[in-house]
Image (cartoon, rainbow over all chains, first blue to last red; front, side, top):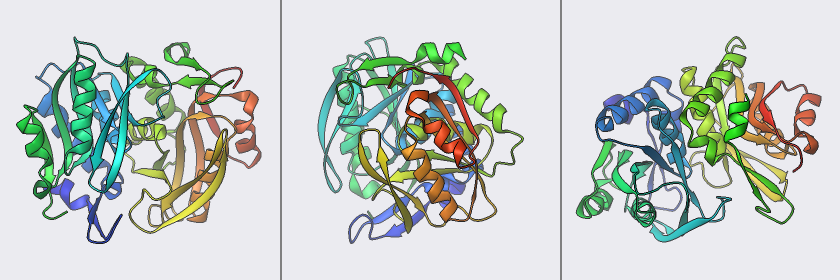
Amino acid sequence: MSEIKDTIRTIPNFPIDGIMFRDVTTLYSNPNAMKEVVNLTANFWENEGLTCVAGIEARGFVTGSLIANYLSLPFIPIRKKGKLPHQTISQDYDLEYGKATLEIHIDALNKSDNVLIVDDLIATGGTAIASVELIKRLEANVQGCSFIIDLPELGGRKKLENIGIKVQTLCAFEGH
Amino acid sequence: MSEIKDTIRTIPNFPIDGIMFRDVTTLYSNPNAMKEVVNLTANFWENEGLTCVAGIEARGFVTGSLIANYLSLPFIPIRKKGKLPHQTISQDYDLEYGKATLEIHIDALNKSDNVLIVDDLIATGGTAIASVELIKRLEANVQGCSFIIDLPELGGRKKLENIGIKVQTLCAFEGH
């Protein structure tokens, strides 16, 4: 656990003043720590009857695809507006700094699916909750959410748990 | 090879009229075909002395991270403007439809690195050549480029080969 956290770099004042940005690119460049992320995540969820892994653009694509591949499951991309070429449903949400829209292909999931949502970080939870909504609107089940980093002071993890979503995080940082 | 191509869906008139968009999300949802992509790519490059794999945002993150993980190498993200939190260098380029800027962290690579660039598709080559430039500006060596899909009529592969870059593609589609 601590090895993963130790590989994450903090960049002060990005993208705006006062934010301590947790930079996972230094984790991505450490193959052993990345294998640890995949192993810890796959082991945590392997008896949960997952049928697929959904990754949130863009950093959720990195770990989401690795976890899907490790578990031999389909990888489902949740993307920013206008990026998915087939018919989509979309969901607006508030970011920690701004507003945005996420989309998923309408034929990406169905009611027999048990989905693990993967992203790098849970902050206020806006992105994750929008992803939960997209998956529920396709009548699939959200089995849980997995993040490398928790920012507990921002409350996103609690918001997810309050709507009945199981959450795994691999490390936590104080502050924003 | 044909199994991979067969999993790719074509969406007519996306993102603009007249474009036949090759949709890899249907490949992503096929775990066996994804393992085939990773195996074919890793086997092709395994004796080339790679020190890391760079993936181009966003679809290059999916296969790039898988190939890096398989080869136990660092994964280096090449991102759109404004996304990387640490100090970057940037490179403008022309897209098949539009203009954009790519960035890489200045400390992501050094002159001892042999880099494989990964993306889902090579069309006109603008994105790939911008990525080659970024890597060369960090004094690292571009060992080659690997793409799932070649669109040979758009000439990107030839442009890369003309500047001395070795290219692997796993399947090809006629037309745009």
